[in-house]
Image 1 (cartoon, rainbow, N blue to C red):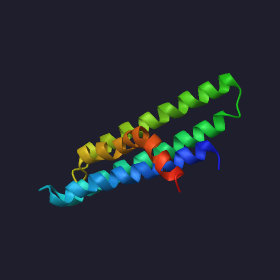
Image 2: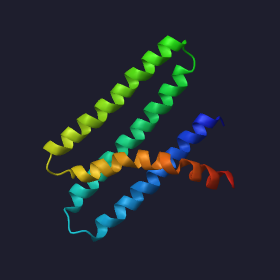
Image 3: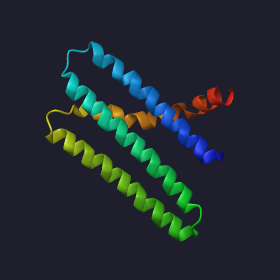
Image 4: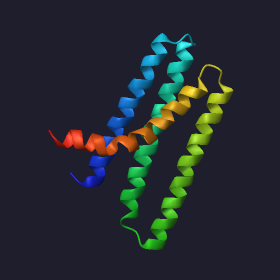
Amino acid sequence: MNEGKKTFQELLIGIAVFAILFFIPGLFLKVDKLAYYLGLGLGTLVSVLLTFSMYSTIEKSLYMDEKSAVSYTKRNAMFRLMLIIVVLLVAVYINSINVLTVVLGVLCLKLSAYIQPLTHKVLSKK
């Protein structure tokens, strides 16, 4: 398995770990449970989609000339940013979705990237 695919899988594992960690407080907080979990689920789904998009973009750009790769990568980065903005705006206007947990779900990707070296180390021992 190539390193890119392995890193991609490790990021997905990290996203799942943080989503579970953010799921637990919802059991004890006095908040609208449905809104809490819809927001967290939506944010986590966005994190997974962003991860797929980044992996796909990197893999495709490797086979392009430099100028095309830079253009393609920038275009896809803008798409990912727009996706986050649209999802957050939808969450703001739909009262049955908790915006804070959408943000937490999206942040699962960032947090997963921070612990990816640890995830790699743990998974490599198997």
